[in-house]
Length: 154
Ligand code: SF4
Image 1 (tube, helix red, strand yellow):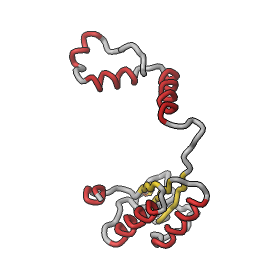
Image 2 (image 1 turned 180 degrees about the vertical axis):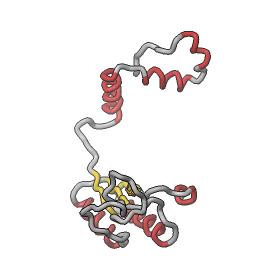
Image 3 (image 1 turned 180 degrees about the horizontal axis):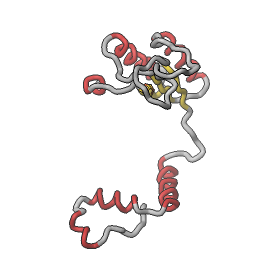
């Protein structure tokens, strides 16, 4: 359990009626190494400290993004030695997933160089990619740019 003194000035205490907020402030005011130590204890409580999750990151659509993020090699606004690649096929993702599993991965993360995820067939294909990855028993995650509410719900 956490042990720390509350560093909220007494006159402000009545303002902080939400115990979760008070607790968050306690954590916020912890000295850094105390915070690291407590985080480490929580991690050891729930995870095997000798284990790491093996993940594979797969670019499912590379380059040509219309956004102008200055740091990003995927932006169409910058010269970068990154060949453009259209959205992968389901079969290509299936092959990559099989390969990842054979090499011990338990998660496959997909990244697509989109500012906003497009609707229609491309988005349906990505959903099928997620299903395909899960059918191998792997966890799936994706970074697809901004999603609208309907996309997020799916
Ligand atoms: S929106 Fe994402 S992919 Fe596009 S340029 Fe910015 S960081 Fe890169």
